[in-house]
Length: 247
Ligand SMILES: Nc1ncnc2c1ncn2[C@@H]1O[C@H](COP(=O)(O)OP(=O)(O)OP(=O)(O)O)[C@@H](O)[C@H]1O
Ligand SMILES: [Mg+2]
Image 1 (cartoon, rainbow, N blue to C red):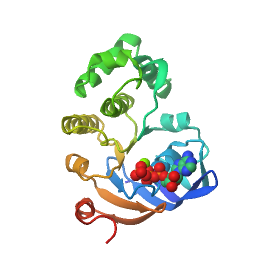
Image 2 (tube, rainbow, N blue to C red):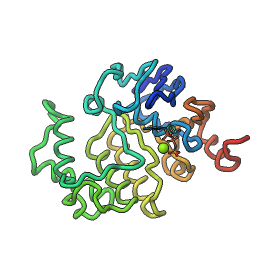
Image 3 (cartoon, helix red, strand yellow):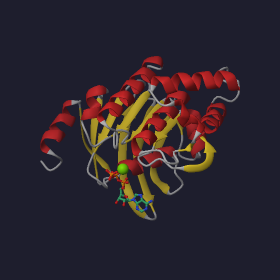
Image 4 (spheres, protein in one colour):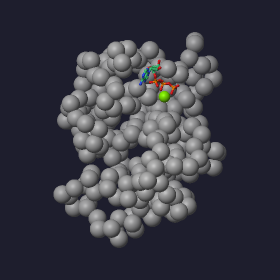
């Protein structure tokens, strides 16, 4: 089977400081890969570089999504190709109503395809996803993330994911700041999204094995100093939880 995402020898720098030192990763459709690793090892930088954040300069290597190289594409074009990033610290955008933003993002993504929806149909889709994530429908009438609690922001990221249905979802610490019930709801939401879209791959950045008990990873990688230093099956996360990184 072809890879949905191929990262080949990726080197990247931020403000001339090298932070990714030759990342190699192959993700197949439908797979869940977890990335673990100490604070500052480059996990979020990898996520931003994949998404094309202008601050992260690719110095060598390539990022290929479903056969198309992304290196020179802007973040919106990468989104259109099917890449999605749920950020560790989602932005607050005052004055932009959540449901309007989501409809624009959806329409931009599916422009010219049969998935285009009229306002009423889009709102029906949106409300079905709000229900799936057991969110209060009032959230979608608020400004993006403004005044949302940490956990509410994370749930709002998954709402976006559920609506946009990417080929690959990069989830940067989606489990941080969630209470026990919210973690379960987010994981059940993710599972439901994946059930509807079995080919969607997930690259899950996390510090904790707990989320991986709900969403069993096919592969677990350890990132250190901008390199993948170890990869293994789900039991690697258990070992890390028990012994830490300094073994
Ligand atoms: N925009 C930036 N400007 C300056 N340094 C940066 C920037 N982004 C990342 N770095 C540096 O790159 C290194 C990797 O940071 P990154 O946020 O990718 O780590 P992380 O693995 O996500 O850590 P954590 O587990 O704490 O979230 C750190 O030393 C960080 O200070
Ligand atoms: Mg991070």
